[in-house]
Length: 408
Image (cartoon, rainbow, N blue to C red; front, side, top):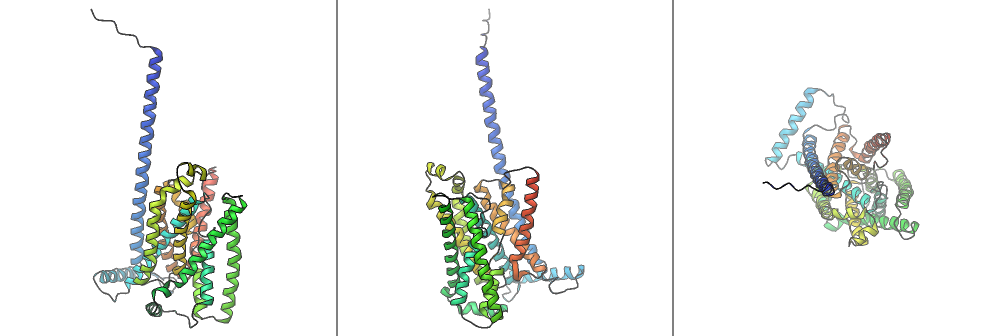
């Protein structure tokens, strides 16, 4: 005879069902996490491909079409593109006298500057836990321009303005390493001093704690006051010496331009510090995920909050100073690019920061090429501000209309 089956206790059956459901939820969450990771990695690969395509097209396609009043036609456009491709092939084939190398070097600098500003904005927003923080809103760029203006007014040699590429190249060859970076030291001092001042004032307003509201208000007021003073100084110098070296240097620094960065020496002087700073931030980017929880929570996890924050802020401030030293003030890139990237990668800084660097390089390349088409590369700050402001308003209207209170 077969033994009768033991009847299962109903309570044990419910416990087993709960355990099974919990296992399913864990498996579902793990699958979702892996899917998000793969999606973020695919996003980075797509951004890299788009950057490479945009870079190649920007180099090959003709520039200055509208600025030179060229009678645009499909045949002319095709012939000019073909000539650029042939010249690029000649340079890659070993022709050292090809002018195409200057275009390639300049667009490499443009991409590096966009990546540096985007990474700087991402770190500022994460370190200070404020979605409005950026090199522009915190007054970092204005402080750098102030330091650079002090160098121009009191230490730069007077002389006729340098306008041609050959003159710029000859002047660079005559400088030693200290002379090449002298203005950069003043700009770095201005940037670091501004950050220290703004953070100190915000802590004073927050009674020892970092106040995000006071941080943005102090940065905005500082930028407005110093910016107004610098505008008066520039106006005074334009009245006295229109074509003087000091007047031209001050105007380029405040308007933002890549006209004076086109040689291999420029690429090395700009690229090496920027790549070193971005690499350091890629190593430290996981620390930002702890800072966004707050200082007390980060300390409870064993993090040295003040040291880590000061280190990261110091690195990205140095990146901003390098950009101002060679390309002048370029606004809105460090503010709007992290917001754009956060919409497609999320708030995890392990994925947000590399994606922001790629997005910043991509956007800067596109904006500069459009500025070259209309002949407005001598005031790139206006182009980035117009494009960045339009994108910001579009994002604001879209996400506010969707009743998304945490759109930033």
